[in-house]
Structure formats: C-alpha cells, structure tokens
Image 1: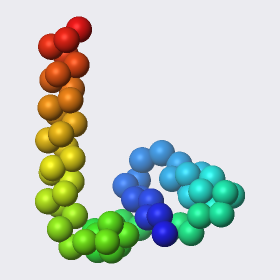
Image 2: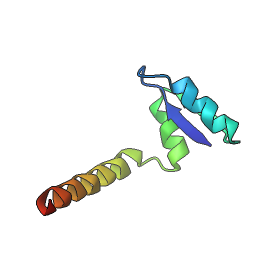
Image 3: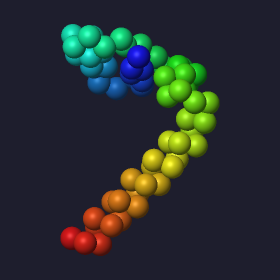
Image 4: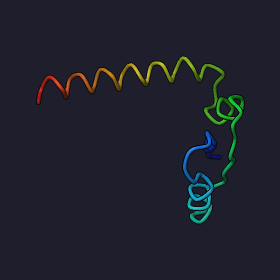
Length: 66
C-alpha cells in the first residue's frame, strides 16, 4: 500500500488516481499514524531524520564539488 500525504497543496487526488491506474493500492491521509503504518515502523521520525541528514550531506558534497 502507498500512503499519499494530503497536506492541502496541489492536486493530490490526481497523484492517487495515477497510482491507481497502474494497479497500486492507495490511501490518502493526513494522519501521522497512517504514514507510520505504511512505513512499517513506529520509528518513522527517526528514519526520516536520518534520510534528511543524508540528503543534506549529499547536497553539501555536490555544492563543494561544483
């Protein structure tokens, strides 16, 4: 299942429809618990922070190189 986060920006229903058109099961939600359940762990915040730190590191490396 894919959880699409509804944060009142853009046309998220079109995103849901696109996923459905290729056979994906979709849930549109504003609830943090739904996102955590889809992630498969209750430590979603911890993993998110880790991913953001890695992304920041990568951005800095690219900035230094170019």
